[in-house]
Image (cartoon, rainbow, N blue to C red; front, side, top):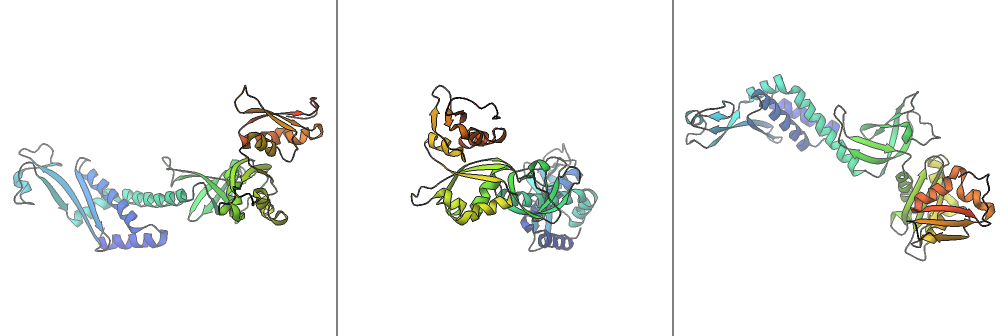
Length: 357
């Protein structure tokens, strides 16, 4: 491979794929070193120097100067070493530059696949860095295709294509090719063997999606005036979000709702009608627990001193079903939001058998 052609190819890759030249050179260096080491049965000490500005590529083999050669791939006699360094003596290390033709032949014969792999790894590394920069954030994705049977989707995020599994989609949504959607990057990890690129977990069911949507729609959250303290969610059905402001003049709940419900309404639309309860956070667990059971009213909250983070909540008889929610959803989300175990009882002390916990 001629140096000029190699660097022209690297320059094209840099422009077309946006991979920095230094990253590409690092990948090529590793690839060539691997190829040359294979040529020397993996025992030689090899290093490679690429200079994109001068468009030069130099590969060296390090050998030990010894009185008696044990391994020809690693050792040189004094006489052999003095051909490269006239003052060489036993104990010296000689760096022998391989001729460009020889390097090209080795690369062509044994290193093509490794070089391609090095370039792929460089691109995967760039993708991993891009996703890491947006980890725990929301990004816009374009639906590329949807499996008609499993409903798993492939979405485009920048230049990458990632799977959005049905389990990570909102239950009542239907994705179609060409749609633009917001997704939450829930995690980024190195690729498994046999997989191209980093492993990226994207989701539309994660509570973090709702949190980031509020940050983007509510200026007071974005600038720090209002803080999101906790989020609990059952995607497609209901979300509870606890908010707080240290500024007594700021209504944290009202800021999130917006004028005539415009702010929260926009988020509800993006989540296909998912109900959102915005409650005021309090350091007082009794106040926070009572608020978390909205839209139900609470008569009293009693902390159970004999159990860890456990309490009993009394609600008006007519609001027992509202406090518990359909199949226990309201109580369940309140417990997740507060981190407390909540035992809900009617004010009369009589449990309605028709209420499903």
